[in-house]
Image (cartoon, one colour):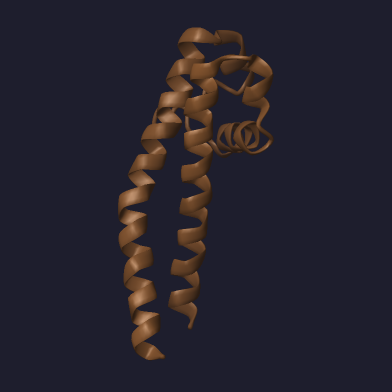
Length: 106
């Protein structure tokens, strides 16, 4: 059982190391696209940016935008693809972070 838990822990941490930067890149891609192509929506989201204007409020707005799939209301195929990929990465990273936390507790 300990060997299995060690394997799960290593896989979760390794997956996190790989997926978190991919998620951040995907999120920044969505932010940049919104800034260029849907500027008013980008402003409504608080002018989100990964580094420069990264606040908890802006992060929650962007995550809500993705989770509630508000990007579908924009009717932009490119935005939809970028946002769906960012949402998938968010879900995977959230799951891996949960597994990492549980592996530390157990």
